[in-house]
Length: 276
Image 1 (cartoon, rainbow, N blue to C red):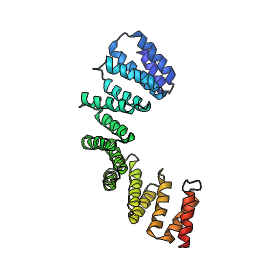
Image 2 (image 1 turned 90 degrees about the horizontal axis):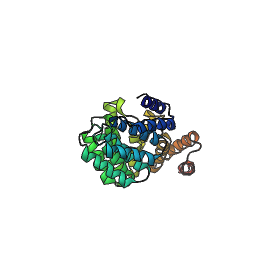
Image 3 (image 1 turned 60 degrees about the vertical axis):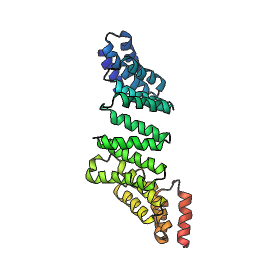
Image 4 (image 1 turned 180 degrees about the vertical axis):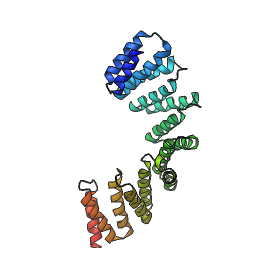
């Protein structure tokens, strides 16, 4: 057990190669098979931290195959699916997670499994499947983080399908959660607000876009979406035909974000707005 503690000390220090050496020393001893699953789990996580996904995959698979009754086995399914995802083996990852749901329908990690399954479906453009999984998480979870993040991913999936009203409804639920429980938004609310602005703009509802973008800029001035929202606000005024406001917003935008990717478009639209 001293070796095991040393290995995890190395993990905490982010010295993953040393951690692997200690885990391997302990694995070679194999005094207690009931302890070996924990050793394999530690080894797998160290390999994941080092981006050695093939090695991590071997360890997670060994836990699943040799220790099916272990307390570590459900997390091994999650780890194996992530390793497969990182290796670009998306369909294999999907099958692992589906198998995990089938075998452990009452697991405390069911939210994790379903959310990760939804995420792989989303990343592989299987948006209807993603919607199904994220909807199940929202329905069954008691965890704020899973419910709120699933609403965001649900909105993203509907947006990819161009079902704008349903996407907007999902993002609106994030804002409602923020109003009821401000401590549980986990940074997702500014993203939802930005996406609502995008949907309003795409739907040519420019007044709604202005309200959404301005709300984000007012309430979340340090958001990573500030630059995009500022440009969206300026462009919304322009599309609405409020050229004086558009010119003013574009001028402020260019002054604040000097190296913006939108600079050429912003300068052109500002000139057009001043001309009008």
